[in-house]
Amino acid sequence: MPPTKGYDVQPTSYPVTLSVDFPDRPLNRLTTFFRIFVAVPILIVLGAVAGGTWQWSSGRDTSTIAIGAGGVLFFAPLLMILFRRKYPRWWFDWNLELQRFGNRTVAYLALMDDRYPSTDDHQSVHLDYRYPNAATELNRWMPLVKWLLAIPHYIILFFLHIGAVVAVIIAWFAILFTGRYPRRLFHYVEGVLRWHNRVFAYAFVLVTDAYPPFALSP
Image (cartoon, rainbow, N blue to C red):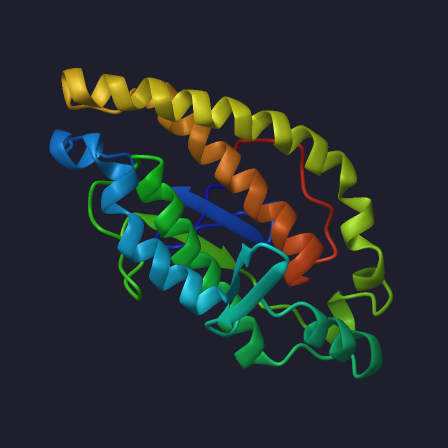
């Protein structure tokens, strides 16, 4: 029976989804050429939101200073799931929006969009998590071991990310000469981002107990 018009019926879809709109248009060659430099301001903003540290040394003295605040909430949701069997919605929303912002920035660096990353608009990157009912859908003990169970994914993603870097370099030349992003390369990079986000959401954002599929496809 076909799905009802107006509804997207995906009963077997993973609860973490990501897609990037393919830019079926000429891309800006100038900003593509200088992309790594043009992206510096938004990377600073992302670092300030996600939190980080700066460290420098002079002789025997080493100084470290923390900048920004926030970052992905991992330990606090872990404790709440473990002891209270709940995942506060505003913590969930923070993690989701932070990951959306981060993915827009990565997509811009990967030349998948020539529009400067927005701090709030979703633009061409569509990332979504399904909000879990922690009491019925999340095993209270799983957050303690998910990062360990995901080790096979880390190994595969290491090589997939190397392939993605090569694909972006090839795409950089293609855009400079043709103004277009090769569609197959685009979908490969999109698939790597999708795989990465599934694993990250499973092991560290803790929004699902469903083991991530070994697949680039939606």
